[in-house]
Image (cartoon, rainbow, N blue to C red):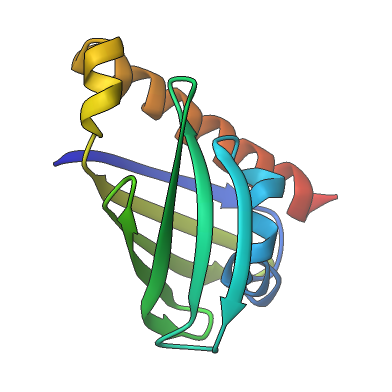
Length: 142
């Protein structure tokens, strides 16, 4: 599995950052590759949603289910379908600043490997993760 690990400081209270990330409907606003999120059901552990993801110009459909949801501390979910992945968000509060740690383990789908070399895709996904966290920071600090 491939892995992306990033962290960022966001000048916003942890409650605001956690609440925003906890709602999958917000994903299309800050995650550049997230094309669509729908059918969000449940809350906390077991929350479930469907998604459409764009990787290297190829759209993949899948679903995600929350495996951890500890208010203002941690969100984790697994994704299955077009791209299998494990997402793990950890939140740390320092006054009105949130330190967000994001760890993603994912498989690169076979159609993408046929189109581009794996090393190039990994580098592209690293840039996309940086851009997504920058988008999140901009949205939550304004």
